[in-house]
Image (cartoon, rainbow, N blue to C red; front, side, top):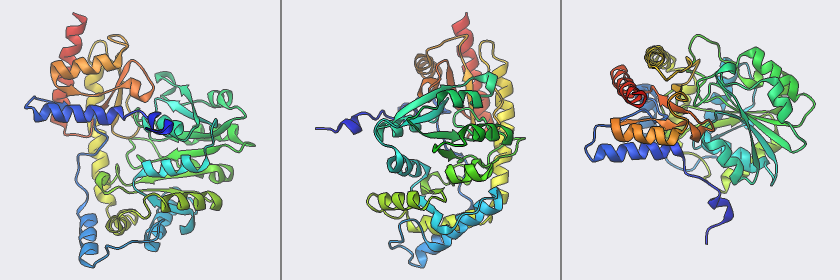
Length: 389
């Protein structure tokens, strides 16, 4: 009955863990969940006020598929002001979250057998969407020695005549790694003379700690032409439920193809979200964004310190996002079993590293208050001590 394509998809492990934690909590169990990829802050009031105004003004009908003119102009303005990138409004499409932007891109360019290079650890959705698009994920493993970032040599060795795309994520979910300008330049040098597309997921760009964020497309004219920039407002502006993502590319044919696809699937995104997003993109809530960033940085410092005090665990300080990718290899190289037992015995929910393509780790989200973080790590410490006893 079901298509081969749909049966190739696996459920999201992060969502599965979050759902299990919620179920246990609903049963009355004492559960602390560090599995969600969602800020614990509320959407800034100015954004909510703009949404309320849109409702009261009756802005509740269909819009153009890629977005209303003032929104596309706001995205283009943001990309120029903050990233030094020149895009016309017609180079941009807004979608129901960056996940739909990625789906549209993969469906528009991947043919059966096309290879897509994905550095691991990776966000769980990347390889699934490639497989659904009948492509082949080519995974490049990284580790702590490289800061969980691929090198130019690794990229060069992974490229074949079938390579269609590489997915870069900076800052990274799940590791928090951020590519420097020099690192991006070295990757760009490898790509020169090829037709390889770069899908640059920059969703966490506002959440960086002691390091500058560099947009992939800003590296050179060659990278600008080959890069599809993907971003949104879910993480940096705490708008996860609003479902707002966007992509930008100077390739008119590609933008046209994705516009056609979205017109036949979801059409425009929520009209009210579009009005509200303009406020965020125009810089009207930058002060609130900075407050969130500072809070995340303070939590990261505390959490890294506490984890590295646990005999048997280790973690690198993240340069961005709000996750720690904790190494458990001294204790266990079976991340699913480790996380399952941890949840059952301590009520602490984290996500197994295998879901991100890296065994012997778990992802810990510090998108919650500092006291909860301390209590959660304390429980993890006792659990690890019991395993070593």
